[in-house]
Image (tube, rainbow, N blue to C red; front, top):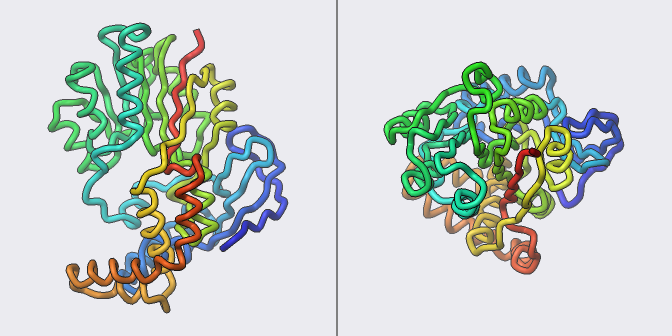
Length: 346
């Protein structure tokens, strides 16, 4: 893919409700499943995943659509992956320990604690992984008993609880309002929102469970970097894993509708790590083809041998990646993540 289809289509944007949209591309359930699980390596799991994706979509294919008003990109059907999807699609063994958005949020909380937040402020982290961010804010900024987390994965939730922080394995939209009304001064969602459907229900719930002067911190993939990846041989941003591709305008629409002010919107600086990720994403994209060298490498049973072959294959693919790497190295807004700080309107 070196350009998008851009076929006009009428689809209701989940953010602004505009129906004037364009299709970027279409994907079938079998190809989507191959993106996550190679049939040549795990045929039964890949087949089960394809069947489950068809069940989620209630059809055999999905569109990736861009709203022509707010430019929010979304899956159609706009249906998020569920617990079974993630069990089939990923073999998770851990979560990232350090992220740019963690550091950026800690910096902001340190400042806000001095002049805006209560000294004993409370915090909710949605989709908290195994608690890496929580460990950055406790005990330096707040005690553990002032934090509540949500996390679906058993591994992550258990890790958070073992650290001494309350963790609920529940969708934030299902938190009982009678128990959590006006409960949190700060709400954080790091690399979570892009996985979620029913976004207006989500923001309405955040409004109900947050205090009148609450702060909301969100990190999502940088939509410019996602588009670059897709058009330069990297991974497609496929549903039902990511179902929403956010941008500054879409965040502003949600803030205006749900009573928030956008205090800051920032893009992660470029890094050498980002260049390496581009090479890896091109490799992962190529391995989805049964006839590719990368796909054959993935069939090697010995893990040490497979890792050596993966490195050699990525190196062999590198010359073809040089034009893309040059763009990444010189364009200022191609960092991997965008970070948003909102403040509730008084």
